Length: 236
Image 1 (cartoon, rainbow, N blue to C red):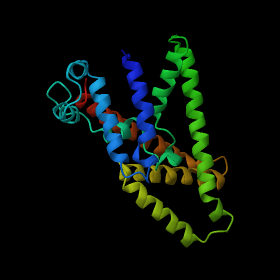
Image 2: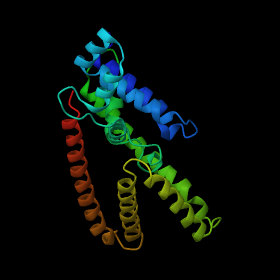
Image 3: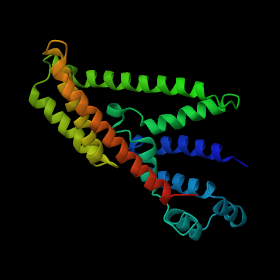
């Protein structure tokens, strides 16, 4: 008898808990994560849910839940859906929780607070969440580079550590795309900071700031296109 929003919240919480990135020592983590994805696809589709209530789970139902969205199309892979919606643990120190995931969390918080759909409260909470995300990432970057900056780590050792971490990230879902985006953002921000510090009035940082905004706009357009494609292919 759970509502659609309750099912979505349950999937969100359980998928985060059993995600393989959070359970690297569990050999069954991948299977558990896919089971959660399969259950969500069944419970979120009225036709599949009704069939499950009538017949219970079956091999055929599980196969269809993995491969069919109920309208003859292919359902999105649970890894793809979860990665787009909520990001991965390996890159969260550098990007924080993906903004679309923050929107989901904030909407759930506001809508569940006495059932009031307060747009003002949502906007305030979303702005606060975004600011916290930026601060968390800044603190992580400071900690990540502190040993190199204070001279406790050689440039070679720091570079080797970065390469090892990048290799790990690249193996994950959308890993290479994350690396390109994170690397590009860090490079642009570094140039902007150096341009500001080494000039009067920060005029040298202006071209970099403009380039940063253009790149951000391009990434947002690309992400919107990807999200639209997923929404079309996984429609209930």
